[in-house]
Amino acid sequence: MSDTETARPHPTKATLLLLGTLTAYGAVSIDLYLPGMPAIGRSLGVDSGAVQHTMAAFFIGMSLGQMIYGPLSDRMGRRPLLLFGAAVYVAASLLCALAPSIEWLVAGRFVQALGACSGVVLARAIVRDRFDHQDSARIFSLLMLVLGIAPILAPTLGGWLVGWVGWRGIFGALAAFGVATFIAVALWLPESRSAATAELARNEHVGLSYAAMLRNPRFLGFLLTGAFNGATLFAYISNAPDLLIDQLGFDIAQFGWLFALLAVAVIGSGQVNRLLLDHIPSMRILHVASAVGVVIGIVLLGVAASGIGGRWLLLAVLFAALASYGFIATNTTAAALSVDPQRAGTASAMIGAGSFAMGALASMLAGALHDGTPLPMAAIMASALTLSALALFGLARPAART
Image (tube, rainbow, N blue to C red; front, top):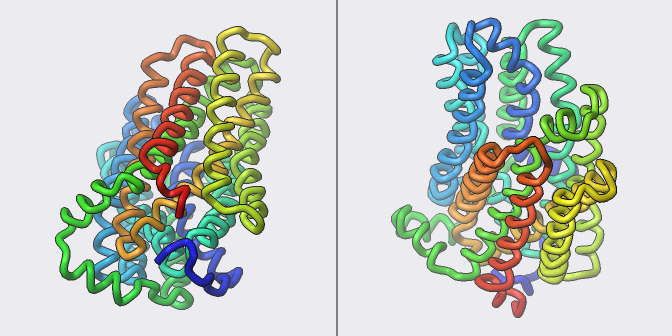
């Protein structure tokens, strides 16, 4: 299946909403939970470092789980694994809500991530099952709109839940979210895996499937392009509270609306990308966005190092850097999944795991280099944008001719 294939009918709004909700599993599970972290520490009698282990466990589960669900879905189908993942998510959320100790909560968050990642990885595969490269890029842009609501609304809702029913109520709400998605998938989401995908998966070992994808330089190029681009977002998110409050001097209330405003950069760029895709090929947008992203990264590094323009110029350039993520992420995902559509589940798993792994590395590196200024974050973002472009224009460049 190539980019020249006949475009298939567009999905209904209900299908898009459901796929967007599945994609947002991870984001909702993180952002709704953030306001409850101090209360968790007080309730379970542990310090903030111990509570952070629950977040680390979730990221590890998200990364590992995707590598399992992806190839399995090529063999067993997308729908049964989505239902299984939602059931695991509900059970783990209830375990978290009832956790008597931090150790139980860490274990619960890990298992919760194993359920959550089913929606993230399989929603991407479902899009590629049904749509060609250009339409996939357009739909991923729409899904980003749904996904982007989480960092804007979830922290506020989480704070309200903590004040009303305590931190355990957050996990009760997440369990209800899981039940709702289970019912929606069961009632309204048909199987999308093709017969050709099923036949190939039955005759190919999982390890061989992964090896086949990694041997393809185009896919490897897109994989690295997306992973390094993801590192730019993770580097910002992991530094956001320290950057906006401690370094730039905004108060807690200002942090909330600034965080939301910067989230709009990612959401808005995804929607501009969707409109551009009506007139411009996805690969052309990706190449331009990647080149512009490198320039923005260099400017961000210069502003952070020199302090020129003060905090508002830094935020303006940071907004532009985050906007580049929206263009690069959606088109890279569509391109990577188009390299070998019959292995869409495996490819989706590698895309997700690579992004989380590189994002975790960027977050740890930002922490190790922390010096109380925006410079380490800017240096990581500039480096990641540059490496992303090198992967695109190097390994993945032949895709420009397709």
